[in-house]
Image 1 (cartoon, one colour):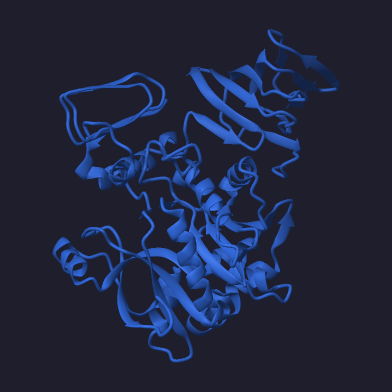
Image 2 (cartoon, one colour):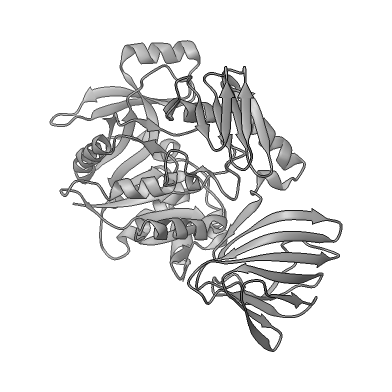
Length: 479
C-alpha cells in the first residue's frame, strides 16, 4: 500500500503577526524547536511504520513561497516529488484535485494523505499508528478524515459529530460536520464525547477523490483538469496553467465533498480519532498553551527578563525585552515591530494586519530581512534618496544579471568572496574590498566560495523600490 503525502503550504501570515508575514507565514517559522512547522510535517512522515510505504511528498504552494519550500526541504534532506505552484490560492479542494490527477497520470492510484503544513503534532508514534490505521480504510475506498480528540471546550474549531462504529475498525461514520460553536454549545459537545475537532487532514485513494469531486463539484474537477493538462514544468516546480486555475471555484475539501458524501450511497466516508498532541497553532494564545513554560508560567524566547510577571508569552527577536508586574500578556518584538496585547485578545491580531494592509505598509508583507533563492537581504538604514542593506549570498549562488534605471549601488565585502560582473568587466572581491555600480550598468553578484558572502550595499538614486530591476538572465527563471 503506497501513501502519497500532499502538503498544503499556503497561508496569509496574519494570525501570528508580527513573527509571520504574508511573504513568510507560520509554516516557515521555528516555533517549538529548531525545525520549522513545515520541516516537522515532512520529518514526521519519515517515521511512518514499515507497513506503510510512503512516497516522496507533493507540496502545493504559491509563487512567492516556492524557494522557501524547496530550501527548507533541502536543509532536512527531504526529497520532494514535485512542488505545485498555484497562481492564486483556491482553497484545499482544487489543491487536492490537481495532486490526485498528477498521482494517476502514470496509471498509479495511491492513497493520498492531505495535510496542512502549519500544524504541530507532539506524539509522533500515536500519529503514525493512526495514519497507518486510516490507510487501511482509505485503501478500501473510504473518504477519510481525522478527528482530533478534544481536551476542552473550544470555540475556534469546527467539529465532526461521530456516527456509528465501522465494523473491524477504530473509525466511525461521519454523522455531520458542524461549524464553530459558541461556548455553551462547545461545552455540550465536549461533555457528550460524541464530537471531534475537525483537523483539516484527509485520506483517500486518488481515484476515489476524483470520482467524488466530479460527482459533487464538476466545475472544480473540470477547471483542475485544464490547469493540470496545460501546466508546465519549471525545474523542481510544476506551474498550473494560470487562467484555468484562477477561474477554478474556491472551496474546501469539507464543503466541496465531505459534507455531502454521507447522503450519497455511492461513497463511503469515515472519521478516525487522532489523539497525538495536535494543535493548529492558530493564535498566540494557542502557542502559549503548547509551549514549555518557566516556574511562573511564562513562555520566553530571546533576551527576556521578567520580575513579578506570570503566564506571559514573551518573544524578543532583536532587543532586550523586560516585563515587570504584568500577567497574561503577549509581547512580541521583531526588527521592525512590537506588539503588546492581553492573551485573551489574541484573535484581534487580525485588526493590526487589516490596518497595515489598508495603509499599504510593508510590515504586513515582509520582515526587515527578506529571503530570496540565492540568500537574503536586510534593511539597515534608509533616508531621502538612499538606503543601506546587508546582503547574504549562499555558497555557489548568484543574483540575476540585471540593471536599474533609477539607482546606483556601492558594494563593500564584509566576509567571503564576491565575483562581480559590471558591464564588460569581471572582478573578484574579498574582505574589505569594494566596487561601485553606476546607474544603468548591467551587473551580477555571485558567491564562488564555500562560505556565505556577506556585504553591505548602499543604494542611492531617485527611486529605490525593489521593482526597479530589469533582469536579463536568471538561474531561478525570474527573468
